[in-house]
Amino acid sequence: MNRPADPHEMIQAPSLQGPHEGYMPGFANDFETEALPGALPQGMNSPQKCNYGLYGEQLSGTAFTADVPERTWCYRIRPSVKHSHRYEKIDLPHWKSAPCVDPDVISLGQYRWDPVPHSDEGLTWLTGMRTMTTAGDVNTQVGMASHIYLVTETMEDSYFFSADSELLVVPQEGRLRFATELGIIDLAPQEIAIIPRGLVYRVEVLEGPCRGFVCENYGQKFELPGRGPIGANCMANPRDFKAPVAAFEDRETPSTVTIKWCGQFHETKIGHSPLDVVAWHGNYAPYKYDLTTYCPVGAILFDHPDPSIFTVLTAPSGVPGTANIDFVLFRERWMVAEKTFRPPWYHKNIMSELMGNIYGQYDAKPQGFVPGGMSLHNMMLPHGPDKNAFEGASNSNLGPEKLENTMSFMFETRFPQHLTAFAAKEAPLQDDYIDCWSDIEKKFDGTPGLK
Ligand SMILES: [Fe+2]
Image 1 (cartoon, protein in one colour):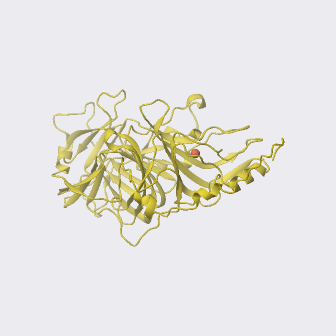
Image 2 (cartoon, helix red, strand yellow):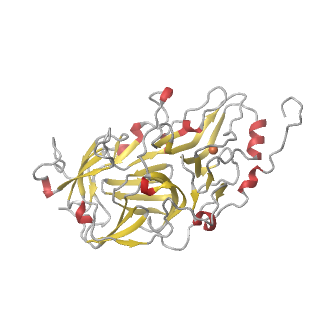
Image 3 (cartoon, protein in one colour):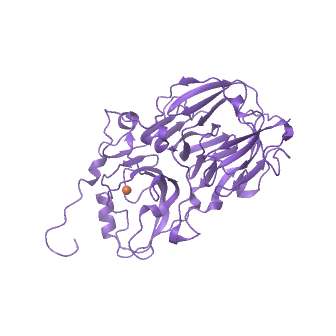
């Protein structure tokens, strides 16, 4: 067998040329891909013997009996039982899981942070993860956590999987490679990636330093939102989601696999790379999505819809219409509504809203919410435009206007979000954020007329 000269180079399946090179288009398709010809059995899943001496193994992301089971058949050099040995607990003190309620922290409030700065310390995907908030309970598979990652170093002979969660990765700075069991995803700002629960991978730095946001979803997988009266087009189109083609490495070297399981981290030592899936087929796979392909829909005469109109992906909870997590995108778009206060209105919300800025300026907060920064408007806490945004939007000439140089997002959950000690005491919290509304004037004086 040809071994790659570069130890991190994986043997990859031939794929489509052009923009899909290395990837297969479609959301949750039933894909099939093989890195060596004939490695994928045809017409059956469990042949008595597999080609190349591979082992057949199923990875199930849903219960066997789910209405639409999500599972992938892998044909690999060794079965996964060879990729785990005895487990030892390890400590990753900055990666927290719900429930994580610190008695010394007040989560009730409106909070905003400047970007968490890089340090001189070399950090990997595992050591560089900084939990900001947690919600729900990882043990009952409800809720989420939000993290900032600061990554400067490639995981060398080191691999990871989370049994707890699916990870939604939103890069803000730098480029990362996710070398997974099912293939390679290269990720840059303005793209997102979803890494499914249970999938083993290594994260490499392609261009550092790297910073970004992660939504760790403890619950049901992300899916495309129901489109209702919008119909089949616009928003996120299924063809723009891309799953990787099969890729594998046949590398025998002492290696470590770290496992996140019920909020705790464990290590197991093995003698080879676990990224040894030569061929696979199924609908449970990692994927990426280019946020610039998101086609926003909005008001074209007056008023504006709820921000749910900008939902890219939604992770359902047990209550129909009430998401465990919505991933919502605020990107460049035209504002044309007549006689309308155009920025997001003042509101209180049962859902809790964690926002991050990928680049540019957010229309409801012209200052203070900067790229790499985050804000949190927790359950039933009021928020809305600051004085400048309010006065500007109330008095501007309402011609068609393009919001440019802006890309922010929201992780919105039905559960209240609790700040970690890191978020409250170490991260660059803006102590004066609450003051952004302090100079909003009382205009009412009992007389009618526009003020
Ligand atoms: Fe809000």
